[in-house]
Length: 491
Image (cartoon, rainbow, N blue to C red):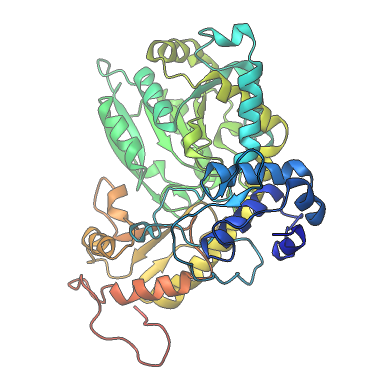
């Protein structure tokens, strides 16, 4: 195939990641049969000239396709398309927004699954270069046991990032590098909870709230006191029982409701924590993805008494498989938390820490977040529109102002959301029942994941979901009657 034949490949220089665009475009043409098995490809130099890109861009795209099994290369012969053993795929319409949306790659059982980021646009080649560079150039002292808290370069890079984007105020030594937010919560609860002391095991937690945090608190012996949340966030004035030893919150984007805690509620929370001697664990898991406005500053940034431990993770904004999260702990807890981390040995590999530090310092992370924020905003808007059209009379739908999930509640308070979610799962939908997130009496609802929604197909997906949605509390199976006006059925 001549290089000129690749004029079909439009590269959007404004969005960046030219290598990824070339890789995905060639992959799709191989999968749909446009580029047949055995077909030879132009040289990397010729194709780079045709497309007006650096030769390294084409080389890296070719290498990714080879590694994935789409291309074959032998010494002394041209690169050719491999036999991938798949039937031609139907073309996927391009969304009107012009944003790149991948063809659906989800199993049928994973539609609208919450808590999972989209990795189809992950900068594989760029990240591989950073990993490779650090893997080849680690200094001798980097290869020892090192400091369990994390390497200084990454501590400084993370602190610089969250200081600029989240208003966090701290010193680099307060940043503890851990493999996951779960590890951070477990670490902090092991230090903070004192079951042998009066009220030493009391933990206040948002209601509804993150089930994994609930489980970790229970495992640490906590006496959990659920504190109700409303449209302004956690309301500590409605908390009952003894004063807390710790308080777990997600103030910037409450999980799973999506609401943002108001300033008045934040100040009230800090006042209660200060008065009771409690530490607030602020889980800031995906606050970078705010679609209608700038993200509100972190609670930690307005704490003047050193009572907030701030948690962040790269699993949502970068990739879960990188296995990097962090806890920025109050200075008064630094020694104790550091000793507990050293004892646990929950250390992130040094070359990953070093590569991530470089990735952040060079502005790559911020650029990737900007790109994904635009994609997620379009997917959230498409999901809200489709839900309102097809299920608006059965579900009350959140505003979708941020995050990777969308909260909805059944208008019929008698609905059994767990039974409905189980039935939906049997038909390929993976929403979570709202009752899963609540310790007390649950307001029934469903939590939708929007990160991997395809705007071009979401209307059809929601129409299929609408046909399965119960019309009354007693109905769990498919609806028995639908509107016959030619449009999709309304719930």
